[in-house]
Image: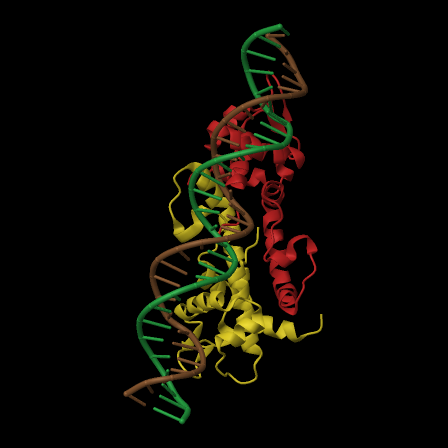
Length: 139
Length: 139
DNA sequence: TAAAAGAGGACTAAAATAGTCCTATAACAG
DNA sequence: CTGTTATAGGACTATTTTAGTCCTCTTTTA
């Protein structure tokens, strides 16, 4: 099981690519597709979600494309994952704080709830800028 | 996205149910299916994996069923998840330490690697006994 | 006003998840 | 030594999620 699906992976790649550009220029989809290795039509959908979440802004027409709407410093991995994949949970019962319908779901709540919180905290601690910095270092 | 799929959920429920029994008796599949709400034929498969992983032992024939092979104190959530669902990873590139084929996968490695480790650590910290204890407490 | 670019919806393909079913094998009671 | 109760295990099916495509529409600007 992977926490990060392909769409989020593409999103992170695209954001890191953008963060690595010296200036905060606008990046056409075609460029992002080439840089990330994602099919352009698919990446479009991913970027639309980042747009909806206020992470990036897009412009149509000639000279259009994608640029940051938030400072890459302030964009967390959790934010990207949630924007692109939807909510992250340790178990179904945690999504949107849905009420549990039996005691077993609540067993999950009581103890695994801590794990859930810690996991989200981990994902909140990493930002696009972190990732971009690391990428520039030698392997 | 849920970290814990239905099969693991059933496994945890069954193990907690077993841990709650006063004696370490043998539990027939039918009993476990009733206690967990899982379809018996499906639960069978799940338990087989727990057996293969050395978490429980099973006996066939009259009076047969399932019992702990390891102390429930020593059975971690990570162990159960891995036994039933397979490896847990933050991204594909982490499964079985597979080599990355491009720098983006390695971007994921360098920074998200820490998250991966922390996540596994979280799952290692919770045991079946923990879950069973919590379940007995009032909501 | 035509070319370049993203928006958005409907659609399809592939893979993972969740289960079912059927036959075989083991253990034990009588 | 055989019938009954129980798990083993493989093949199969259904459902859902993930991944991707395609086509038409709108926006932008040279």
